[in-house]
Structure formats: C-alpha cells, structure tokens
Image (cartoon, rainbow, N blue to C red; front, side, top):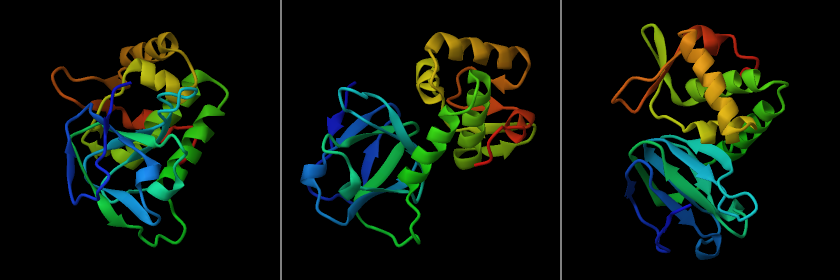
Length: 197
C-alpha cells in the first residue's frame, strides 16, 4: 500500500485527490490533537503488517480522528472523494461519541451476520445511511469501492463479492453509472437491511 506522510506540524487544510493516502504517525502528534474532515469522504485503515488495509472507519465532513488513540503503527487516511481535512483541530466534546469507534463497532456487527449476502446488504445500507443520500428512485453513494475492498469489509473473498454484486445488478438493485464516481442502490435493498445503523 502506498501512502505519503502527514506533516508533523499542524495544518489548517490538507487537500488530497481521490485515491491518495496519508499515514498518521502517532509519535509525531501531541495529546488532545485530532484531524477533522472539512469536506469529502475518507476511509481510515490500518497500515500494520498483520492487518494491512483493514478498514477501521469512514469519515465525512465534521468527523474527527483522535490522534492520541492510534496504535503504535498509526493509521492511514485514504481519500474516497476529493478530501480536505485539518490536522490542527481541537477535540470536540461530543458526549462520548467517537466517529472511528462507532464505525468500527458497526463494521464488526456486519461481519457477524450469518451469510455474505446479508453482510453485503448491511454494508451497503450502513454506507448509504451514513454517507449517501436519496436521489429520486435511487440511493447514491458518492464513491465506489473495489470488489476486493467490499470482500474485506464483509469478510469474504473478492470472487464472492463480485458474484454477489453481479446478482444485485441483475436484479436491478444496484447500478454503476459509466463515467461517474458514484454507486446507485435501490431503496428497497437499503430499507430491508438486516441491521439498523
């Protein structure tokens, strides 16, 4: 996995194009500091050798990543859409709510559903409910994930996720518009999810 390093000094705005990742090194961060997403959608993942690429959370505008709660290897932040965040934010008092912890819990819940089909449906529902929006006859996600990444998120192989997505496309429950970085999902697929986010 390729990434660049985030500058040690706090910055008011770090801009990243889609697909770029930065490593957040906890040893370079002081207690109480955090990153805050200004615009865009990011994926937070583990760069550790044993769990390389494991998704921990997705972040959107207003979400924070506390840098005093990272493992010793740090974490990487990947831009799923054009991304802007600040590394000089103060930790917000959110009555105990932590976006990364909440995402990790929800992703863990998905991994414990009985079948890959249910896990995929629950994943799409979680992503749409948190990061997407309803647009007419479809629910839109503002980014796409690879079949390999979807497999990682639902605890299956890329081959299994490709097969399941093909079934959803054949049933007209998912649409991948050519030339657009979005994913369209049928509201019936989202509304009948086995988990409520």
